[in-house]
Length: 310
Image 1 (cartoon, one colour):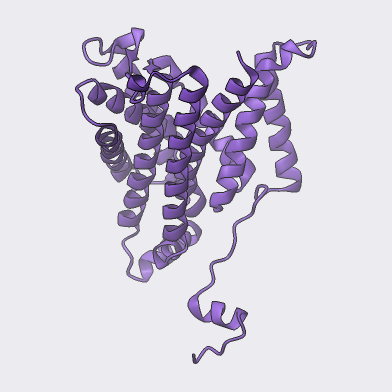
Image 2: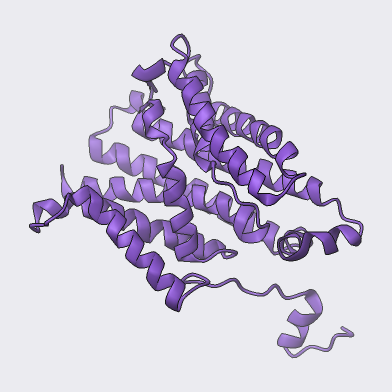
């Protein structure tokens, strides 16, 4: 493969996983919800996009449909589990991920079953070269990353975001103040699932083919490592974590072409991830970019030298 195409391809996957990590950061980093089935909503978004785009629907409608279906399923999964201990949410989401994968694996007529499903590219009529095709997808994906990042920054730095942080720290105290904690948690789970669905749609659009084994629980594991490495409760940290982990993952795949390794090059990434986690726990338990405190309007005025009375 052309080295430049390989680099651009890596950046495309970085962008997709940035979106996934941002969605998990909203759920866990800001609200404290342990979603261990993130791949399920990623997969739903990919399959809904792949199925609907074949019926001639526009790109943006298929992408939105994938996000909507993922959000609805997120609500249905989280609503009963959130009323119990947090452990049940983790167990439920893990099980849900495997159930969805098995359903798509068994569905032959619409989802293609084990053979997968081909996805037409929205750029196929342009007759682009391989490099230009990757560049166009790169621009599309990073525009979406920018939009989602800005929206989440505005959301988490608003009064709504302060409620989410309060729920993460002590949901019983928030409930005592009259807030419907379950309502907020389900909302967050729906938003996070919708964002994961968008990432799935972009993933299907770029690869032009999806099949069930592309959505193993290992995907969720990677997203969690990205978030923990970058820093929970910090959207910039989520972007940094996705960038570093994806480059390590891709770099380990081509290591065999340059270095003689005593182990399978594919397994080198897991060794590196293990070392990273140990170092993080020892020296940076909050990740590379720790969470920043939100300043209220009076605090901002004081920081700028203005009086509170103004």
